Length: 279
Image 1 (cartoon, one colour):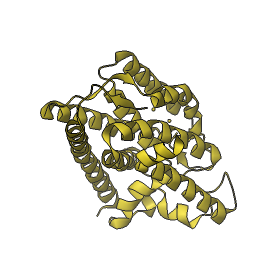
Image 2 (cartoon, helix red, strand yellow):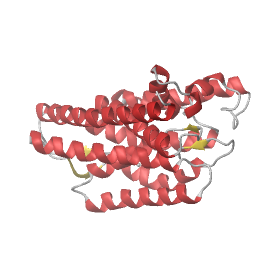
Image 3 (tube, one colour):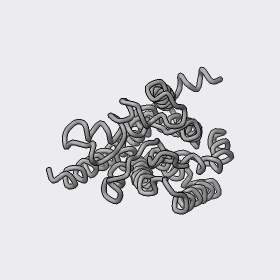
């Protein structure tokens, strides 16, 4: 079962494995399980921090790489669980190409908001991406109001926790969430324009699992080292019995929709960096 899921969701699986490997490298470099970002050359070259940015390829890379860094076991554990839970459902629904674009685009959206509102915070973590995934998942349930409401409540609760807990990158969460919401709207519009049905009423098992565990995820943003952490949504299966051609058209239109939004998020992020650096 697990092997089959990994085979069907290479982007989600690869991203999770990358987060784990990156964490282990920083642990070896720092000699610490919890303070792994302190004395790690990899962390120093990947985290999001305005004074470390230059208006060239480094800024472009850091807008993505900071999402693979995690500070401590708890931070990695909860973000990893949420990435798996929601990433699997979304990738199965919209395909691997769309999932890769969603991951990158929401990371850049999160980074853009951080550079606009809190550029001097040193930020690591994938929760901006996870908030984006939650927003995309909520859009998947436009025809399933109870499930959609449950996801919206989950998002609001987690944002509330971010507001009252020191050291959590609230702006990173908001940036990822807004980017994911724009992607959800774009996917819905693309499916209307192409005449394909979006995800129907059937709720995937991964969403139920996600809603059951996401209540724990808000604790993942605890701050232990002066580093802002991004701390924690499901999938649906396609309704109806449409053929392969229709499914491919739906996935292609979703990929194009999120690509446009993701490119916009990247451009805004780079513009914020250039403006802050006076470049």
